[in-house]
Length: 252
Image (cartoon, helix red, strand yellow):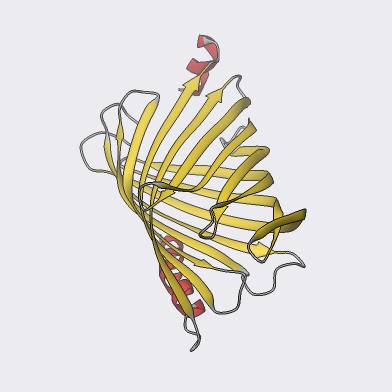
């Protein structure tokens, strides 16, 4: 538990430390973020992943959308390994220039479950190929960099049901730290920090809805330039189990 508290404290401190430059420039933005996240367990070890996200700025302007697909492998301990591909379109500057990104990603995720609490750790590694921009316009070629992400998600039951049981209501505290790496990264080694607080409701055994507030602090590629955003987030999680009945019973 001390480790969890340390991670949460650092989540608040790191953005403050990066933003303490005397010449810092901070832009403030407001977003709405909608997400659909799907997982299927096809066999005892293998499964499939799909998620789609749409973020809008000031209710009506597209900020970005992303489609992500992957293949899941679970080991005997329940640790989940995922690898796949994502395509993202971000709409840059006041002209809403459509910037394409191809992304290869890998992920390691595990969950610690307690009677009324669920703690998830997720490490994600990304190789990002983004269209080059010059003077606010798309130019031929792609920039490349690595990105490393760590997410800590804590769900605590707010009624008498365990997390993920039907009709369970949970409080959610989540933080994700994203770091850039690569020879093209000069200023923004800290990509961004995302802190989320919300509630989740298990609608059915396979569908979970989550709503809440997310604070994002992002360091831009230019020196001493940052974006601080307030986001209302709406996520729908959908998980199905396609294994045969005899395999399901072994898991329970």
